[in-house]
Amino acid sequence: MDNEDSDSGDSGNTRTEQGTPVRQIAVFLPNRTGAFVSILDLLRSNHVVVLGLSVQDSIDNTVVRLVVSDPETVETIFMEKGIPFNSTDLVVVELRDGAEQMPDCLRTLLKAETNIHFIYPLLTQPNGKAALALCVEDNLFGDSVLSKAGFKVLRQEDLSR
Image (cartoon, rainbow, N blue to C red; front, side):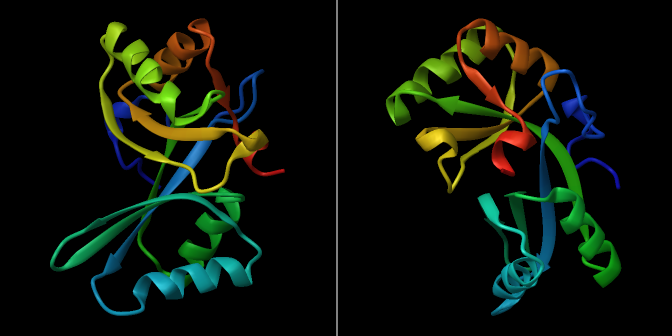
């Protein structure tokens, strides 16, 4: 499947020595009552947990961005059911000091002059810490910059335990 944002530069969910990048699934839904609940029910019936989400609504359509416990299963289910979606890798950063560390994280990326396409928090708190999902213009660069600044970048394995 094509990437939602071809400029992210890090598609394919390729495992590195640090682990597998977190993959976001963006599902395109008609803007009608119950469409999102149906997707959530489908995921739950397949033992997939939604760990983070962002909803962008318009008059005709809704784009729901999901970070899930098992992206491969979700992609398979959506393909089998004919549900339109895209996937892209994200940088997910743990905020060890909670939300008050968010400005420092964003400032780190600003100083590195990298663009953030979108950002949203995770619903669950891996390791009991707050976490942000970031789509940046270059995931490898964003990952490196944040890691060098002392932030812990999470992998899919950290979220799918």
